[in-house]
Length: 144
Length: 247
Image 1 (tube, chains in turn orange, yellow):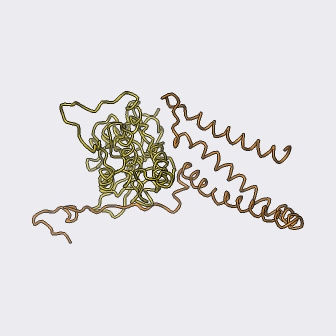
Image 2: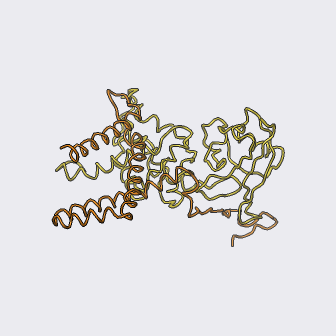
């Protein structure tokens, strides 16, 4: 206990060490602001990105084991549970990509002839790269 | 517009209560009045015991940061009329211990700030007769945005990483470190890298991005941190690719 100064009616603890109030963050802090929720969903999306990687690896493994195994994999991936899981995953992967592209200009200030180019150009170039990659994949699968 | 507006102010009087309570005051709602004017009105006319920090009332001293309706704001730059018809809830900045009413304890930030050496570091000082260190306008543009920080700590109040883990160095300290790293006159980037590349430094940041949104001076601390992550990663990779280069 801090010593009280005689003839002084100030509370003893305020002399040198005030009693601080330390608010604790709620477990549901991420529901308090839209931006926090977006952030948490973006973090969560990594689980679904990982799932797509696993799904792709399973496809490759099935193909390598032969035709029968590939057919089994196809019928399994057509089952409602897997279709729903993949649709949810697609949503999260797109969400991840879009929110990440929107953040890109902040992380990458691009200069052209000494001048910083507008952030929207950086975002647009990300979308353009995405479109080119998607077109390439589509060409490989459908036409190539 | 109503001529009065209700201010709901969080009060914490450690000598009489263990937890903060809310008190409501009616203040004039004038077109040119900011939240700080409302608080000054309360202090002058209604309740002289209300404690809060303020100084310049023109957005440069960084003292009057508080939570206004849950958002970190400089109360000298937040107009009451924008919250009409009210009420306006005024609370101390989030993520800091509260000393009294709206006054937070900023010792943690004050200790972190000098840790990143926010000053020009020279390996060797040039003799005085040779004059100052000159800089072109382009070189100044490199860091000017980050030099606008007024240490108001709104970014700390907006950062959930800092709220959950107070050992995180935080947005303003990292942005200020970057301000000196990008300065053509500075040679202290390596010394700062030691502090910034620690776990509690840049890698603590998960890019929520709210620090940038609440910054009243458009400093963009989130950008400073992400750019520094890239730089730190490249520094880490360097020895693997450049044999015999300076580490």
